[in-house]
Image 1: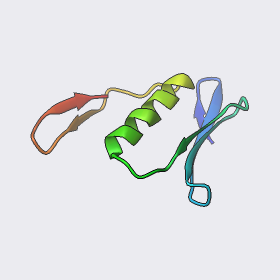
Image 2 (image 1 turned 60 degrees about the vertical axis):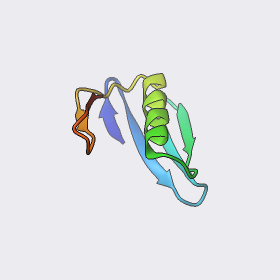
Image 3 (image 1 turned 135 degrees about the vertical axis):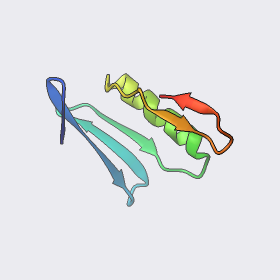
Image 4 (image 1 turned 45 degrees about the vertical axis):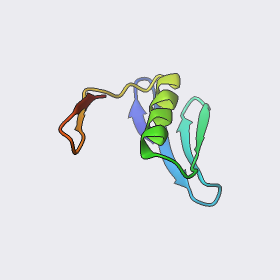
Length: 72
């Protein structure tokens, strides 16, 4: 588990059940189905789940091949 705030979390791919599993040390668990689709859609859902679990990420800038920036 990765320490975070007063607890910890773990993110794991379950390739048997085709899910991404996020477990919190306080017992909360969220899963995201691994289904065919756009990476951007998966990433958006992943960020929403992290937000729901109050795991803050951000401050990272991504650049598209077209030079457009996106700050996360």
